[in-house]
Amino acid sequence: EIVMTQSPVTLSVSPGERATLSCTASQTFRSDLAWYQQKPGQAPRLLIYGASSRATGIPARFSGSGSGTEFTLTISSLQSEDFAVYYCQQHNSRPRTFGQGTKVEIK
Amino acid sequence: EVQLVQSGGGLVQPGGSLRLSCTASGFIFSSHWMTWVRQAPGKGLEWLADISQDGSETAYVDSVQGRFTISRDNAKNSLFLQMNSLRAEDTAVYYCVDSSSGFFNYWGQGALVTVAS
Image 1 (cartoon, helix red, strand yellow):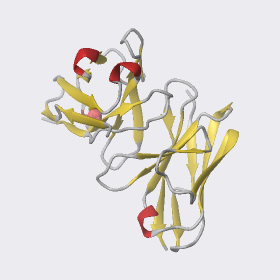
Image 2 (cartoon, chains in turn cyan, red; image 1 turned 90 degrees about the vertical axis):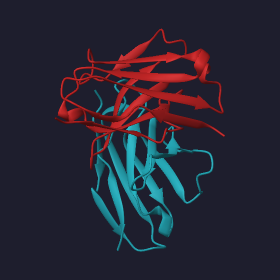
Image 3 (cartoon, one colour; image 1 turned 180 degrees about the vertical axis):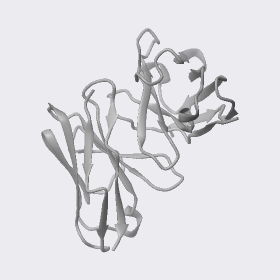
């Protein structure tokens, strides 16, 4: 099983600032990494797949990068609607596994 | 518009059974792998099981292997999760998800399952 570890657990950011979230895998794989955003009481929403491809309708301020064991989600300029919990997930092998989440909160 | 509409959650006693259903529309259901993901209260996301387009292949996380069964009825655009021998730690919101490439594009609204006496 591939263990996914996210850091930090909580990220305090002011609106308009840049946010950088990290995800580390316990085993190496090329680019089978997705990112999701979840707001309270809602289902998660796919943001990024294949490490760097934006899902349909996702704003350009969201970008993903990385390969191997280190992956990054960058939100270039945080908007009020971006404060949420973010999860990474590897889609390289089964069981599919998620990171524990990073909460992006208003500073 | 893609929709995944779930039903079947509720309160069940430890050791009991429950069946979750998910009806899909807006895409060719029979062409997609499908998955169940759950989220315990205040916790993260956990992949549970998935099923191939024709139902011939399934996979489960160890914690539910032998207790939960994923199935589908392509004629009715429906996905199911039969949950037996339920435990308190199975209490969670259960999501039906489209998963054709291993990641999860479309999500159902979630169904709360509470296992308690």
